[in-house]
Image (cartoon, rainbow, N blue to C red; front, side):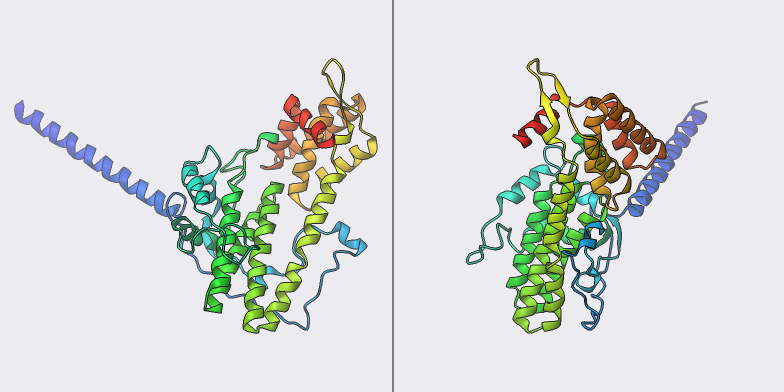
Length: 366
């Protein structure tokens, strides 16, 4: 009986060890399958920029009347200047770690920002970190990925409370690559740094869900393109300087049109507060029409999201007819089941506007 008991215990140990071995193997396989999600970026290459034909290069007429209907994206192919990398990882898995107050690496982000300094003689650069800053170096491979997706897998869509990543860290990285690039003795190496800043901006704009992400992405592209232009001009590369100048010329119109489209659906002038502290909304139906058009037809998803914030107020505080009409729109978006738009619309429909939100409208107007 003693021998049988010993064999039984021995068998149990072997089985347990085998289970641990198998589980360890499965865990390793999962980590390999998701390379880059928690430690390092997926291996990637960056294609060379496409060959630009100056004979066919056009200057987009953003001031022409028909430009009002254009999606707010670059008309000039950015692959001619800074193609995206080929990495299979999601670059957002790295940058989300630095989210303010919540990110597991927020303390590192804070220390990173504290390491910033002005560049002597370059007031146009802003504060940057050292060329060999460890976090800056770590981020480089993540900018070689082909995609960046935050929502809804990494950050939930919660209406006005939707979280964003630490955009100031990303902007500082773009500035730092620009500074390192324009200071490089080797023009080719300098161009690579500036193109990395452009790729970071392209990745930020790629998802097209949150307006502020898009604006910071546009800023990163602007920063990197300015660096490319400076290096091209200094090294006598007239073709590259011309291409970059066309791209730089597209930045300001996109910013201005962004402001104009947000103003179109801004409800601030129509929000009122009575003596008993109750909120009300006196918005004309023409503004309701503009909201619905942007929510349902804008070619840029980020503007649909901004307009949804307006529907949130109307569906709760508009006239009975306006509320009914807006509820029908939101019900339709929820029923369609889009993974980004549906939860946002559901929040707008089912969540009463907070006093903080409404106060923000009034402060903006006053």
